[in-house]
Amino acid sequence: MSPKASALRNRWLIVIAGGVLMGAALGVRHVQGLFLQPVISSQGWTREDFGLALALQNLVWGLAQPLTGIIADRYGSAKVVFTGMIVYALALMLMTYAQHPTAFALTNGIMIGIALSGTAFGVVYGALSRIFTGPQRTWALAIAGALGGLGQFCMVPAAQALITVSTWQGAISVLCIVMITLTPLALFLRDDMPAAAPGDARASVPAGRASRAPAHSPDDASAKARPAAHPPEAAASTLTMRQAIRQALCHRGFWLLNLGFLACGFQLAFVAAHMPAYLMDRGLSAQQAGMTLAIIALTNIFGNYTCARLAGRWPAKQVLCVLYLLRTLALAAFLAAPVSIWSAYLFSAVMGFLWLGTVPLTTDVILRIFGARYIATLFGFVFVGHQVGGFLGVWLGSVIYDTYHSYDPLWLLSIVIGLLAAGVHWPIDDRPVAYPGPLGGQVS
Image 1: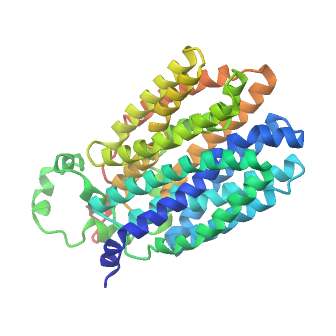
Image 2: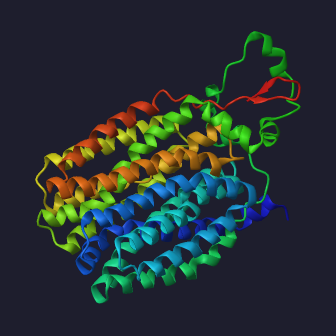
Image 3: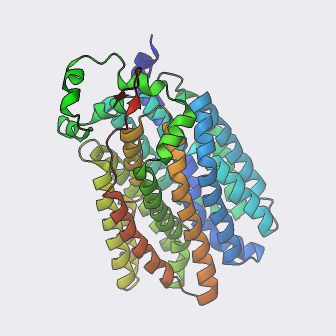
């Protein structure tokens, strides 16, 4: 049985494995805000101490993502995910012994940041993008993203219950066991098969989108009428990783994606890390504040699936523009309205629906322009911008609160950069790049 036929036959096992692993990795990260108060209370630390660890986690995750992407593209995603899960579990175990902010930053910050780069959507979506093609790829990314969101949702009440019945160290120890138990699922993500190029990425696009390919001059008419001796898939397969990276770094749209993703990371990291504490400062209980994270994770399931599906119907860059505008409107409305249980829950529902839908959409733009051969590597470079934003969102939130005892400046900044993110995606040229042909010509 060919690798492609085997993937189609076991597609549900592969996608479920990827979704569960991603849900566990992102779920543990998603509940970090629930540990803020227990950790600083028991350890006698400040919010800045805790926030610095989370900020480092975001930054290290982003900086390590290109490297893990390169390793996954070269040696296979399964090995990277398996190793990442082991590192994640080890970091959680060591975190329970942290008695100083530096040790906490080393484990919860640096080690988990490295682990996330090998277990979250960068590598998992990369594997699924190579294993599946055409409409099956769109389906796989949508289902895996929805399962990842479900994992985050389930992690919130589980973490709250563990913190309630035990200490924060006890809760972290249970999460460590969960990560070890799920590690073997990484074996389902073997993607050691020929990958597609931009031409294949367009296979999942409706006929109406075909006109987005670069136009040919009249001189190319005869060449266009002839069957291509070297289709785009073959042309892209001859490209080395270094050439692919250089080509991406010279593409204007690649840098615009980085800027847009920076805004996304800033908003999400700030909300996830600081909103529970912000709500408790405004009079909500710890359970009510924690419920907002659960609502975000729950509606993210449907939002992630919807955004992945929309990428097959409309230009992903345009959907990204609308998503950032809606997210910015939600932030502005929440900041303007009086804080209550219902305003917090409504904001969380809207924000959750728009939460991680940026990931399959951004992945689709990269696939459309550069193809799937080095998708994990190229997504890794774009993801650096996301995590730089995440670092700033978490760290600035802690510093500004400790200085002014207010989060309002960060809410306002989130609104401003959301508008900028919507603007930078519109001019992205998402037409497939041209690859050098065998006689110096171009194929696209």
